[in-house]
Length: 334
Ligand code: TRP
Image: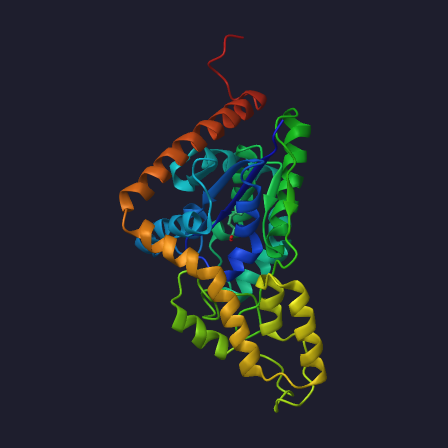
């Protein structure tokens, strides 16, 4: 039997290279050998953007455009809009009884996000429990595999705990998922300090125009001690090399370049021009497809409506099973 994949993204902005390295590329690669569901998690986006629903609605379309542009094929992958599947909220409700508040507060990704977003003592309750709704996303589709960046691994761990508890209490209905983490799963931002993110303004978007990409690469953090071309340079922690590691298809050439950089003799400007070329080769076809697709918004809507309807049917079947297992079936003749 083919295994099932589920992943998703919050539609808080267009997708960037971090998304590509972290999971988009893996989805494109796996979509033909697996039953693939890709969730545009607009409800999850509301957990920290409750005041900006129009922006999220707009970004649902942007994210869908990004998906199709990178090669997610709606003929084999099912793209689902989370808010179109109310059964996910229902399942979240059941799961909330299976986790403690203390466990939620220990989730390292949520902890970091809370610090990052500066919620202070004003943490929206929905935000604290979003890992539970993510567990519902994953289990409603009975996913075996979840391709995600390293920061999402705690979510899968928490999902596994919920699945075990559910199956022990009510019967073995749900599937224990496994995270699929790619080789480079946490791409730093162009500042080199933390992961690429819209809120930090350090991201390169799949839809960025060539001169914007050029500008951003030129501002990238390299090795501050590599002042002159002939100085030996450091490859580790050098953002340009991290990106080349992620995207340069010429692996042997890259190893040689690293050697030469370490010895001294490769300037940062030349190095950056190489990265600009590599990113151009990767992004030019994606950008072109995105522009084409952008001219047919009705096509995008049709893809989302179809995918959401198909996805909803799967989630409905799982939730019906869960209700029966939980004796929430008062209508059944005893
Ligand atoms: N939390 C993910 C992110 O921030 C998005 C997401 C929502 C997701 N539901 C999911 C990822 C289910 C994997 C599986 O990008």
